[in-house]
Length: 328
Image 1 (cartoon, rainbow, N blue to C red):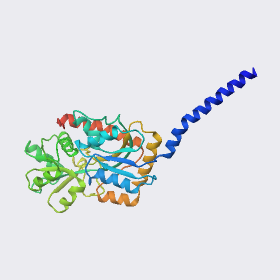
Image 2: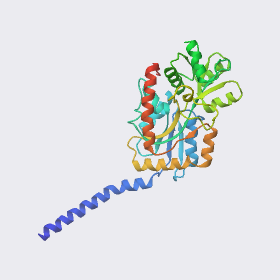
Image 3: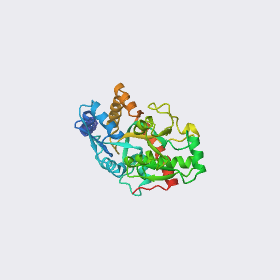
Image 4: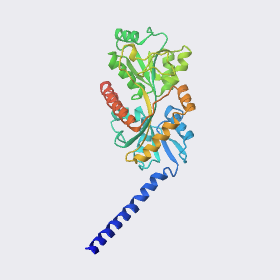
């Protein structure tokens, strides 16, 4: 009896020791994160909001390892998204995702190189920025209600320019048409730089433009701002009312920026990244910089991003379907 009990205790001791040995490397790896540089992939050229936010992360990080910003523009951000989707899930390759790459593109592109939800784990919703509806000064409308009335009196005669089919500014215009019951004609360009001259020249009626880039032209009196596309007024331009408060309640076409990691990235790694990014983007100097850029910090836990992304995917899928917009 005693021999049997002794052998049982020996077996239990061996099993416990084996389990400790097997789990030790994983625990040590988690505790050591990060042990090498972190790469954040931006699917857009340098200079834009995704790039700026990534470089703030790179400049302010205090995890003991550098953050390297890697711009991989192309295909509406899908090239960068694919790189991260297929990267090892160890927290060393991250994506600076946008409303396009992680909510709109899935409905716009007939073939996507990644699944916007299944191939990623949310880390943090960093910031958002409204777009702004601007018109040529010759347009006989001083507010959104007057513009809707004008558009309905001239169906198919008013036009809105965009940087291209399938851009967030395009779907913002399509959402406006759907909610207002108007038929403002979409005129796509190959980039904002080609659309703005035609708007300034009066060749197109209006444009949904990024707030930071539109404000200087509005202040010069070359364009008239009718409303911002966010649910609330922007701190960067509090005098410009929202489109929602001018007769289209519920209208919200906000551009947003978030950090994602590959699916199956360990939860403790995601938690550490989330805590660090929350710390960085609540620093007073960072908040001041975001305000000058027309970016409103959002922040919070990963779950906040996951919930918001789900709602955005559903919203934009309907808008894209109703408008018939497609991007190849």
